Length: 79
Image (cartoon, helix red, strand yellow):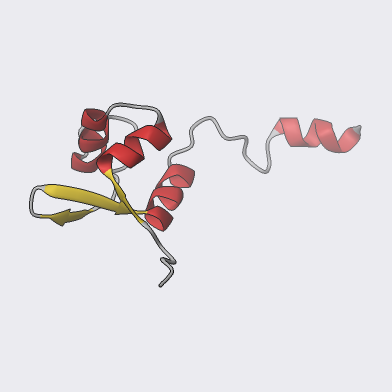
């Protein structure tokens, strides 16, 4: 049986984000300023994150993105 949407533990999420497991728990509880809460499934004391949700959350929380109508894109078009 193949898993189409794997479940990640807090440790696996921490490894992917290159942060501590405690930071992942802070992300899950909404205690990190400047990012949205990391959606998760609470299974008793254990918390897990679906791979697709983690990928979506990462895209939503990218900071410093260049907007589509920015001056930078206008300059690129001119060259």
